Length: 369
Image (tube, rainbow, N blue to C red; front, side):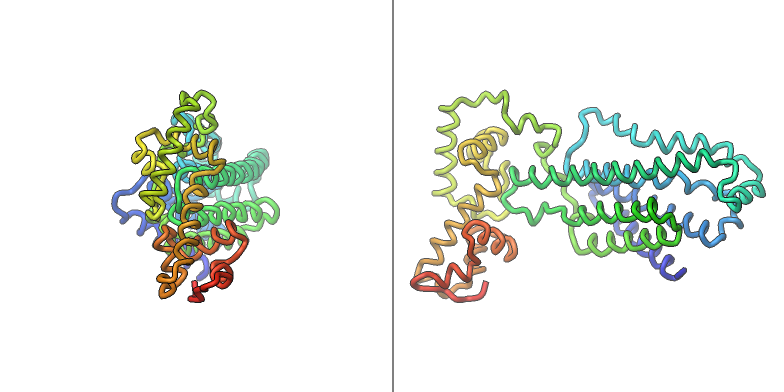
């Protein structure tokens, strides 16, 4: 079992090395770097406390006590920065660290105790600090529930926001961050309901392995990109356009221009087309363009662009000269960036798979997709 925990610390150190060595770090990268360092320190302190090795170094005792309150804070900070859903007053973020600071101030009386007394308190399972133990338990419980749910809400809002900004969700999909959020939630379940230090340690090891596995495989952690400022959830009122200066006549004119651009210039063929790209072509602010698409087309930006891609694919596949090409190559030519996104959206739009649709055509193309 000890080798299992040592392996977990080793993976965490490896991930920390990757994060530190990354060039041009974004703010989320820096937050994750600090969080991973916290995980390494916390993991080590828990391990020596469970094994009893901490009694050989009594100055370490007590340091790990408030640390569980920080993990939810870092999850929230990382998620809110990555999805650009931050409060207007950034100084308010410091309030998240107040409970930890208060807890450390309370423990000053413990830290100044002689080594023998500190060891005795631990061996007596917190004798003399019973009230502190109760407050700590419920603070950790509350912190876990609040921050996991809060982060999940931010991610849910993010999924909605990116559909108004990007035509391809593969590059901005934060599915791994959902795994990170619920993985941390799983650790809190162990803390709250099982209260077994061995189980908690095992949960942390699995959590670190999840970060390593999904982080190395996906660009979200080690190559994260920050979303445009328009993605900020605090601008939700703007996205409802209650005070938009766009008149009906101007909206109709811009909509006609937008439709012509998409039809004649086939801008949808650019797989990573964003609303900022399209707005620069039309010559309007992205908020106006989003308003036109939402209110006139009754669609979000993602559906708007991919509708053009689907219609173009249908046109391409019906042409005799294109029978030499596979369905997937035609999909790429129409602007789709992956087989999975193409198949998924085509089925959503038509109720059929691309192969089923192709087979039903008079001159069918039966190449695999």
